[in-house]
Image (cartoon, helix red, strand yellow):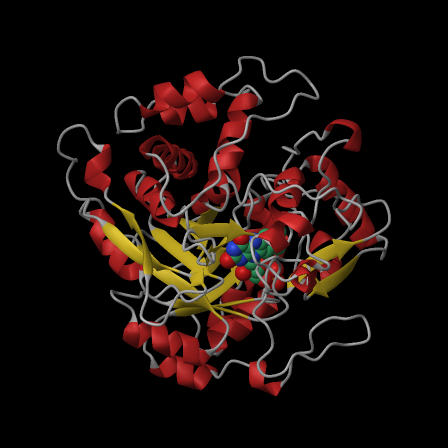
Length: 489
Ligand SMILES: Cc1cc2nc3c(=O)[nH]c(=O)nc-3n(C[C@H](O)[C@H](O)[C@H](O)COP(=O)(O)O)c2cc1C
C-alpha cells in the first residue's frame, strides 16, 4: 500500500527545519525549495546586507533582487540603493566590491534601511509563489544589525525567527514591538563597562516611515537555538516575551558549536572534547511543554525517527541541504567537497580558535579545497564579528581578533587572542561566489564549514553527484513514516 506523508499545513509544526546557514548558504532559493515541500525553509540573515549589495554589483543577472526591491514598502529606499550599488552587466572582472560602512551602535538611517531592504528581499523571494512557511536565522552575537534585519524580514512576512550563538532573551519582546512598528531596544554587550553601566541598541521603525506606518505585522514564531536544557529553561521563563519552541543543537552540527561545559580539553588533533555533561536532558526539556527540534547529526530517516520517538516535533538539518543544487555554496565548491567525501579525502576539524566569536567552528579540510589560512593578509572590512569595548577615553571602539594584530592591540586587545583566528566574514562570503579581490594577493579564499555527518553522506548520495533540496526532504520524511508505522513508496 502506498501512503503519502502529510506535509506541514499552514499553522502546523514542521517535521523538518532546513537550518539557517550563513553566510548566504541558505539563501532564498534553498529556503523556497524547502518551503514548497511543506517543511520550514530558513534563510540566513547574517551579513545579508553585504551579500545583497554584492549581488547588485554583480548585475543581479536574473533580476530577482530588483523585482523584490520594487515591493519594499518604505518609499525611496530601493531607488537610493539601486543608484549606489547596482551595476548593469556586473563589475569589471577583478574590480573590488564597494563596501558598506561597518556597523556600530548608532548608524545612519540609510544604513539601517539598507539592512532592512536586504532582509526583506531575501524573505520576499523565499516566500514567492507558494503558501509554505519561511524563517530567518540570525546569530545573537552579531548584535549590531539584528534589529534592522528582523524588521526587514517581518515587513516581508517572515513566519519564524531562529536565533542561536548567544542568549536571545530580549528578542521576543523586540519582535512584539517591531510587529506594531514600535521602538525595539536590546542591551548591547560591551567589554569594560563600569558596574551598573549599560549600553543599548534601538530601532524605531516610525523614524523610517515618512508618514504613519502600515497596519501591524504578523509577529513571527520565535525558536531560540540552544545546546543545554538550562538555557532553554532560562529562555522559556525569563525572556521578555513569547518563546514558541527550541532547536536543540549538539556539537556535531555544522557551523559554530557551543563550547563543552567545564574546562576546555582538547583531543590529539586540538579539537574540543565533549562529554556526558554536554548531553541534553530531553526529559527535562519535555517538561517545559514547548515543541523542540533536534539538530546536529539528525539528517537521516533514522535521525528523524529517533527525534520523534524522543518527543521532538522533528529535526533541524543543515549539512545535507548545504550541498544541494539550490544551496548558496558555489557549484564548484559543492562538487569539490562531494567528490572529496565520496573518495574519502574530506575531514572535519572542529577548530576552537578559528572563529573570532570564541565558539568552536567546524572547518572542512581536504586536498584540493582552497581554504583561508594564516598566510592571509589581515584586513577587517566587513566587521560583523567586531565587538564593542569601552576604551580608556570613554568612547566605544569595535574590534575583532581576526583583524590586523597591531590594530587589535591598539584598541586594548590582547595579542594572544588573535592567534589562529580566521576572517569568517570574508571567507564565508567567498564560499558563495562573492570573494573580495585583493590586488596582488588574489581573491579572498573560502572557509567551508559542515557538520561531522558530511563524511557519512554516502548513504544519502548513493553515487549521485548532485541532488535537489526536495530530495533531502523526501529522504528524511521516510523516518516519519517509520515512526508512525506508515510506508512510503
Ligand atoms: C554551512 C553551514 C552553515 C551554518 N551556519 C549557521 C548559521 O549561520 N546560524 C546557525 O544558527 N546555524 C548554522 N549552521 C547550523 C545549521 O543551521 C544546523 O543546525 C546544523 O547544520 C544541523 O546539523 P547537521 O549539520 O548535522 O545537519 C550551519 C551549518 C552549516 C552546515
